[in-house]
Image (cartoon, rainbow, N blue to C red; front, side, top):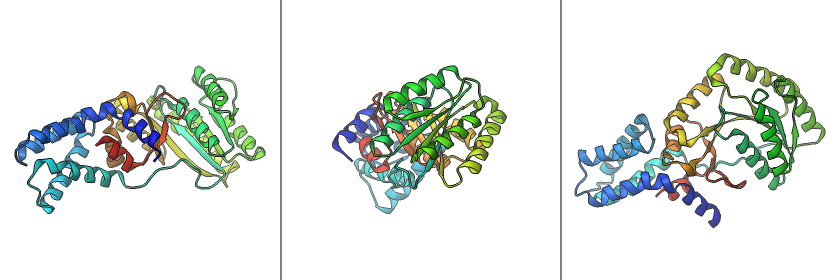
Amino acid sequence: MLKGFFDKLKNGLEKTKSNLTGKISDMLTSAVSIDDDLYEELEEILITADIGVETTTYIIDKLKEKIKEQKIKDPSLINQCLKEVIIDILGDEKNSIEPEKTPEIILVIGVNGVGKTTSIGKMSSKLKDSGNKVIMAAADTFRAAAIDQLEVWSRRAGVDIIKHQEGSDPAAVIFDAIQAAKARKAEVLICDTAGRLHNKKNLMDELSKINRVIEREYKEAFKQTLLVLDATTGQNAVQQAKQFTEVCPIDGIILTKLDGTAKGGIVISIKHSLDIPVKLIGVGEGIDDLQEFCSRDFVEALF
């Protein structure tokens, strides 16, 4: 990873670091032996960093196994074991949003306020900079500001946008966007969709209709659905993700606002509870602050 990128990641995780690994280091420095009290204290730190009870229990169990296997007696050596356990949970793959094959269509879902439109804008910019022709589809037609916001981002990123009037049929927007993507030979079509989770039935119907249009009109496209979650909401984000998986299959997660929270442990919780890869993380306000997620870099930056 480029030095600048790694520094950005480290700075973006500063709050989580002091809440998680900072506290763990302090605790291990003062610990005399590895006993139940130490594990209890460690458990408490992990839970307050929003790793969640279930994932924390799993981490502690795995940690005990490793400590026993490696016959570790010195508390200061626990850090390295913990690091290995977390890397095992996150997997060692580096996630990329570069299209696996083209044309590609990306459906982006997520409730209002999580940073969905901003993520689409930054993702479009990233893909365009790496040589892809990108088109955006403004299919979140129920929120007045969504179309305007996406239009602002399309100008910033320098990509085309397909939009209809507010309140129009989202599937019709996707239909037109697909025709435009074919005609303009776009590699990637990114679709903003509504995220009204409080009315799951409507959302499910809308997404099925969109998927039928894609199936019929763009069969040849490689399709993925990305869910945007706000890291500052901690365990609520995990609950949200669970609810969305009941509505449609999710291929990856975009986790925004990691720089604004001490709850970065949520990354570990999401992967462990849902087994959905975190593909992109937001570590700042800038257009290039949406980074491809690499678990090893994430753990290194954390420790």
